[in-house]
Image (cartoon, rainbow, N blue to C red; front, top):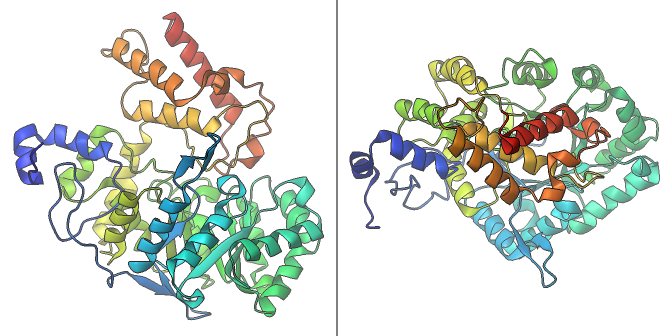
Length: 462
């Protein structure tokens, strides 16, 4: 196809078709100088000296507003056909990020089947940058009862240092407190003395900043705030976005969590600004809603600009699997164009209401629910379902105008996305996954609902 600019493309195809094409790209960047190609990708060089930085008031660390979440890494197959991290591609992504101003990298012993820290250590070493040029954040991810013992937690921290090829951690987090209430906090960090030991490691300089990431029961967050004077949290990582900013559940309300941290002068790290990608993969009419406002901006850039405009935010994490994700996000934050007050209201009220009108499942594809003891691929099932909702391929009945087309798209896509032995009909409702879900999804109930929907589609009884 002969290259044409976006203006000519719109003339030829029409706004609706162009909007659909742009949506299909999964763009995760923002507006920038320069033209865009016919698929909506920005062309021209990405600035290397325009990154927006925020300063940690305690350490004086100058942190890039775009942080690299080392969780959703590109994969390849090894010689035995097993899926492994594509380290060569990962090294390129890491170097490109550093070259363009990104200096905060967030990982965990639990990410990427336990290989994330090791992969990051290799990539940072291969980049040629000095240790003082970047900041490493990792977590004490002692989720299993076999890891509750003090020595096990200590050994996990020491392995993190080894894998990351460093003798100190810049930002160490208690990983995902809140799920299951206070009992797991006592088991994982308090009763075994592990939190006290981590405080000692901070005093010794092996941990420069100590904080926690939060999901779930707000009572746990409130306990942590009440004990701020005891532990002196240096930063806290929360999930926040314009859809859940005013959530009635305080544990999911970005506004409540953010303001509690802001009034204590605790720097805020943001995770899941796109809700696991769901705020970049919205139905076509929602895409049109954004494009009417700023045709040149991607849907996802609004979410990044929204949360990046909050002054207490130290960095915003993004799991950038592919180079185009990284490039587009760099354009959003190099530099940040803060939202106006009117734009913030437009997102929080009008846009959030529009998105909430579609019944997607609140899955962020974080994989905390995995592995399922009965082999289900829980995130893949939810991702396929949400994709079909956004594409209009979840018909309410056989009387739906596009029933046959939607039925075919859902069933064929389901078998392609999720192997039959890993589909929802194999759920026995053991509920082992439920306590691990940071979004507090009743996973067995959703599996039952999806399986029932699939069976009705197959039998033609919807």
